[in-house]
Length: 219
Ligand code: SAH
Ligand code: DHB
Ligand code: MG
Image 1 (cartoon, rainbow, N blue to C red):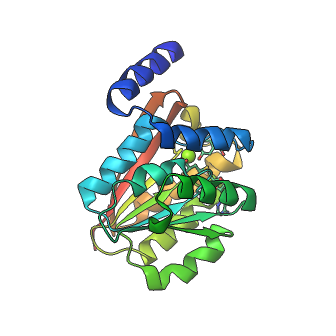
Image 2 (cartoon, protein in one colour; image 1 turned 120 degrees about the vertical axis):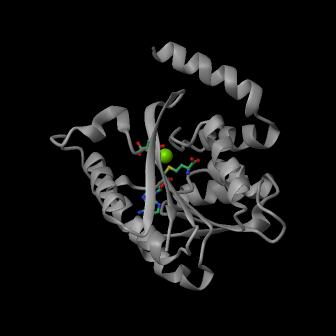
Image 3 (tube, protein in one colour; image 1 turned 60 degrees about the horizontal axis):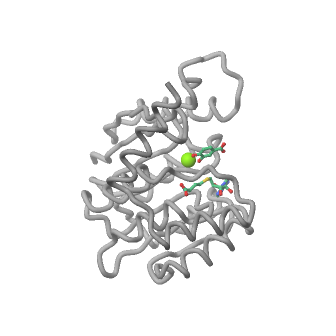
């Protein structure tokens, strides 16, 4: 099946999310700088971009920048005056991302903060509320990131989290991978949170078998 997943991913990304010189440059510079190839796929980047458009988001928060690939997809859909705050712990990743976003011409719309997300988040109270929040950093901390996302939200805020399926391991309560346990704590909190309405979408493609959760803040 994996070959079919990648064939279909390529078929649709060629049609609906074709690359361009700026997106290519982000991926090339990230590879040159030895960043891990774990960013979203082109179709997933386009999906995030569509979410920005569908929600009319003007203030976006991203937790986990890497080389800025997902950041660039979302930044391109911001209305005039819109901003993305993106949080990155690794100074090398942040440096590569900053240069990538400058080269892509979106640096004026992106506020890249370097540090542990859990230390950056309390400082964002004055930038809140965010309209759209994308959680994509260390999986062990997703539950805490959800708590902060709620603090930085308003009714109607959309919260999307990446890597919530992990090859299906999420459904195995015995799995001792701390990242999988982190996702399960996050999922339990999503379920328990009466201020949220949430779902999960499994995905296959060039990134293998994984998925997103999607939630909206009700009140
Ligand atoms: N959103 C990116 C991929 C992010 S990969 C894209 O799709 O293009 C996850 C990133 O989170 C990595 O760059 C990693 O360094 C960063 N990260 C890991 N732990 C973190 C933490 N505690 N705080 C902030 N960023 C963290
Ligand atoms: C990993 C992190 C991601 O955000 C991702 O999309 C894929 C893999 C990881 O840490 O392995
Ligand atoms: Mg991810």
